[in-house]
Length: 96
Image (cartoon, rainbow, N blue to C red; front, side):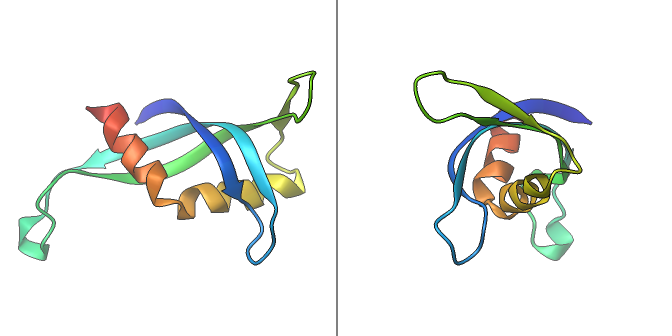
């Protein structure tokens, strides 16, 4: 399992509403081998999981808030990250 910190900005966390988050997340993932028999010709990120989330404050104090996994925001941010294709690309970039 590989890990890295992913930085996000203007991540839409509530579908259909203008609610955005900026921060960072600790990511774990694996890299799967190509599967040419099913049309996958390159390595790809798999088993992506969000291990920790920190959101940035807004204003002059530049505060950060560590979101616990049981906080209601955590699941929204986690799902938004997993749905964002740029996270899989970032995993591949981290692996190279």
